[in-house]
Amino acid sequence: MINAPSTDELKDIHHKMVVTRELEEVLGAYAKEGKTRGPIHRCDGQEAVGVAACAALRADDYVCTTHRGHHVYVGKGLTTRGIVAEIFGRETGYCKGRGGHMLLGDVKTGMLGGNAIVGAGIPAATGMALSMQILKQDRVSMVVFGDGAAQTGICHEAMNMAGLWKLPVIFVLENNQYGLTVRQEVQSPVEDLSVRAAGYAMPGEIVDGNDVEAVYRAVAAAAERARRGDGPTLIEAKTYRVKGFSTSDMGGYQSEEEMAPWLERDPIKLSAEKLSALVGADTVAAIEAAARAEVAQAFETALSDPFPTFEIHAPSAAYSETK
Ligand SMILES: Cc1ncc(C[n+]2csc(CCOP(=O)(O)OP(=O)(O)O)c2C)c(N)n1
Ligand SMILES: [Mg+2]
Image: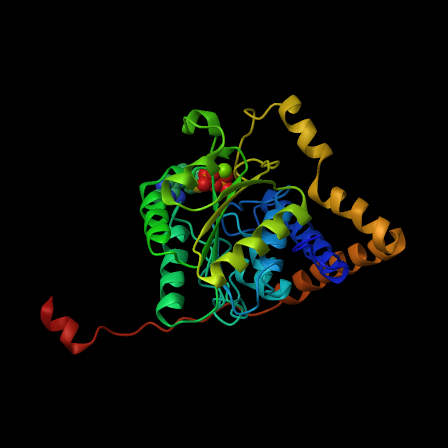
């Protein structure tokens, strides 16, 4: 099959999805006890989008994401320990504890940031793609963004420019069907947001966002197209937000009937079934146990890491004179 992930890649994707899920579950427990620094935007049920999309890219490609980006951080190869340390504000975190869970970035791995400003990753990735084109590199940039972000003005400005200049950018629209408490059909006059791609002369495709292989193949094809110089692609990954907007969400607006089929199609469950057929259930169980142990170890070490220290500087003479 064209652009299909190898068995080793499927094993790595499964490992990273379980790391992400475990991370979310442990963070959820810490948040319940009031031990996180503010609410956490969990990506449970959406792991296949971030992890499989990153798996289809090269290590030197650039990626950015949203306030709900733990699957992208893990997918792009950041260490679990560094992620946990950043979320808990430790000096050993990726941004030395100054960024936190929404603003985590790491230039070395090409993970150029989560973003708390809805839609802001879209022009950022477009700008990265412009730099790659000007520098005549064969790299690509990718942004994972939400259905709510797709309604912002900057999304359309960026896509227009990307289509016009054939920039090597991949727009992965993670349609989890909600922006805060608002269902997607109340935000948009079209059900399939991918149709908007036609307005910017780029291909628009819908994929099952809970199927790692579907996500991987679509992103791999889009990356090939971008590296050939044929420009951007919009991939709408249909998925579902199973844990509410954030750990401070009171809930009550996502019905059990609406959620049930999505829980049934949990991406980790689907991946485990497919992978078991390829490598056997014992190997899958060992991958999952290793992923959980990695997260437990990350919490243990990161939470004994030091907090940053701050020096308070006296205002400079120049500053004092302007007062
Ligand atoms: C520019 C801007 N407007 C509004 C907000 C408040 N806000 C935070 S998340 C969010 C909804 C985002 O929905 P979506 O893009 O679908 O992402 P999801 O939370 O579903 O992952 C809003 C409106 C913000 N952070 N930034
Ligand atoms: Mg959404």
